[in-house]
Length: 286
Image 1: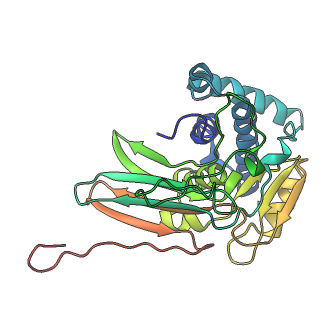
Image 2: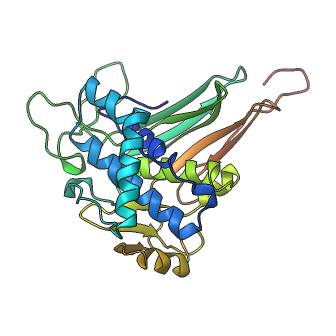
């Protein structure tokens, strides 16, 4: 469950639906990374020009994702791998500190994923008296040029993953165009690779390169190894190594254990953040 168009919930949902057609769990790390990067590239392409209820229904449908997955498999068999170049304004960049994501839950199991962003230079610099917050400024800049009648696009992607009708993960990130990238990579590491949730949040990420090729996280301690990067290159993909920390989104999330009724909160080790929980006192109060 994600946020509606014109935010990037559809990017994450379509990419995850495409990836359902692949046996990610049975792949070597290099192949899994290549498939995830390609799926994200396809999802960004489909999302960038769509802004209607009909478009949202199409790009989040499993039938459409199966079609896109079949096209992707054919491309892979033919030895291709470079996606159509994505708009330059969707660049993979460090987007500063003007976005905050938090994931939270209460004692009754209600869960919330919340992403708040101002945009650069203190947003619009406009506030309504008595409300206590500034309005965002998202017309132009890294979100692209807007035309009259269009809605401002946003990369925010608070997301909930359910299992058997119950919440399993609640997560989201900061980081501009890397927000859905962080969300999808983390979910794949957790569900398909079988990592614990803290391990999945700290695992390396791959992204479609905005302007061509792909970007792979390679900073010391949490990046892809040189062996994996070279193996992906050997598949014919153009790879840009990014050794800078915090360049692939900064994710915060919660993993819910239904069997024990407990939560595990995780803050991205790449960034300033923390996980906190309430403790029950002896008298029963929190």
